[in-house]
Length: 421
Image (cartoon, rainbow, N blue to C red; front, side, top):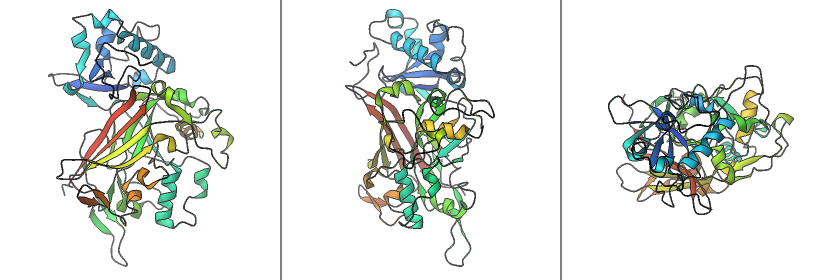
């Protein structure tokens, strides 16, 4: 049965009462401070106003100042009991039959703000960012492109979740322009390496997990307890300069080809909201090491879509449709593996899944795969692309389809602008 709120929620909205994702916003008013909110329909519920009014009166949150902060780090660090208390309180407060906020003529306009009247900000202060490589289809395609079909996936990939440490300072909120990066590219023959604006700029369809409570330095997180350390998920575009990356990545991995920009969506959808859409993860063969073996190995049925609006055109074109459930390594395995050496995680840390590609060409998660490294140009409503051009805008959407409702992530978008140099 679809939950009913006194706030109007359209059937196709990503933000019904079943969802209640968390973000951070500020208004256009002079001196407005960043503060946490929850999305409901086309409105943002100001959690600082709700907390100040004494409406978050459960035992874990009644004396907490976690919603009077400029980010969500303190709240996500409280752990699952506090998350569940907040969710239950907010679902009741926003329900159609609850008069507390609905009938409060003074508080309601202060606490419920039109979404188009606020500016969304990064939801957490991200201390560390790790990008994984967890889609077998993506790994196989990339290996085939660069090494050939004989042995496209390295042996170690099937035994551990491969990852590298990314750059947090260049993680930006959806809607931020992405400046085309400059760098070195592979040389032609005996010539010197190319230097200049990237000629192979790409998107990467990813999602990212937001870490909740961390772990002490030297202590590991059991894979079967890892979900208690994950607050929720966001959409993520980990932009990639393929030519820069190809020239630099041996022997230490990605650097300038990745660190120039990563875009995330503003709303964190909690694992509790995603629970009805949990599904069985792919069978892993060979069986992983014991510390990665889960009692229940789960992904989520999240439909993902990428659109490109070519520079100078009014309409966007769908270029791929994929699904979170294509991931071979689960987000809980990723977290457990990250801590197996004693690495300490902290609230607000971010884990990228890596590009999420499906088995069919129409489900490939980046232009590298969709155009087979530029060999097969992509048709986009009267024009073509092998890689992104200046002025192109890329938008991701993601949602779970319920019975009469959607639990969605909104959008994650960015526009390519020319290098200034």
